[in-house]
Image 1 (cartoon, rainbow over the protein chains, first blue to last red):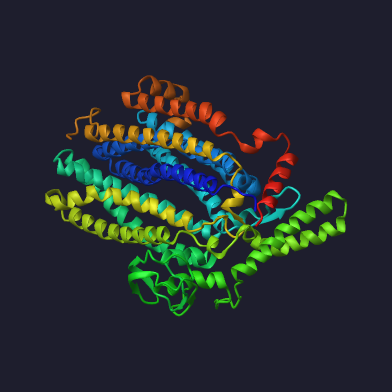
Image 2: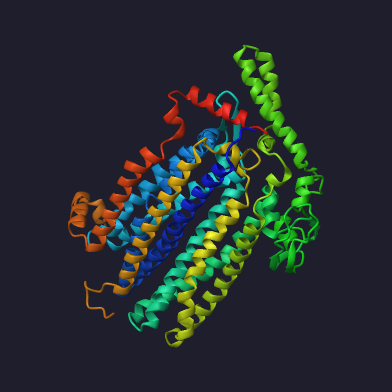
Length: 521
Length: 77
């Protein structure tokens, strides 16, 4: 294997992770706050109550701040595809490019058109037209998310494509298979709902702050009313889509599921770890060391979640490496060594095909192409050296998964309690709950980030599951240039984040603007 | 009843003109930030620090394919 510096791969990954994490600070709030402000404006249009108008306008202002600061943070990720991941970019051809192009052309223009009416059109268009524009703005933003998530889902579960050995690119032959991939559908709903949940947590937290300060009480109560109901619904649905995610991961990325659960030795009727601590002495999948210091399991739940069968066998890391474990379909999974052999065969076939084509030996080329196609499903394994290369960072995947789930269930409880107290007109006088609402906000951001860490760290070493690992995907750059851009992006995003927080805090402290009529704050 | 958008009364240009000329401190600050950010990203980061790797080294699609192919084959274990 060409001696690519491990640090080049590590820094390139770290840079993408850092910029993606920053991007994901802004996007969920856009998605969640967008729906909430649209709901509030809908209430205003239906009831004619001007107080709802001012509530909606305030959140629209906050939406605008977040949107403006967050705009183009995603572009940095696209830059990196071309700079740091050029082999990957070429290799995925139009598979990745098509969804991103649709996102840019359709979704962005939808947003950009109607956002202008949303901000500038309050006194220029009718209530219903303005409301329609508000909804279309957030629908546009959500459609942007759809296409990006379709692209990411394809990386986790590559389908609908055929590899062209002449161009060395994957070519889309079934657009609808990619768009309607079960991984894409579940990922879309789960990611968007996580944004809705975060938006609800944000609105409820700020509402709580106003109640603590005993100001803008009516606005705070209206915000908490919408935030609590919307948050409760969002987090309950998140549990449903989270279950769906677990099912998809079990089917398509069993190693990720094993890492999420710290499962080294497979089990029939496997339980889901509710609480647990991994053993730091566990260094390898086959060292015989107990992976846990302690754990409390919910019996059978992992088998049920992963395979819809409480007695299904859930493979552990060791089983996936060694292969031969029982599956529901009856198919016998290959071992790592067998997959590696087939992967090497596929890569060799590609090399031989190109030589044969160059020399005009068409019959030989056709045979090599056939061998390539037969083994293409394991193409990426040809780049791996030892079984350990197949295993993602188990502690990081395990802890982020479990913390995300715990936080998710916490928010179901929190929003239920907040909604109850709001409904009984008690929250105004329940100071401890106001503080809970306020201080829960960072948890929503943490859970939001943890979800992506599970998704993206858990899929390592793959950029495209089973087909292209990170060490084959990365550009042959100087590590120092990646370190420099890492530092630059870190600085840029930190400045943007400070700017957003500063501007947002200032607007929140200022409160809703009632200057266009006589509504009391 | 037709909305303003459906009648000749609604004027996109007037909406934008009024909107921009009557922007608050907040709106102006955000627009300045957006414009500076875009200039920095597309004017400095993209051309200097984040050029497209393949575009910067090769002119034709065939050359890029050949390079990527060589990379993939050479990185095989």
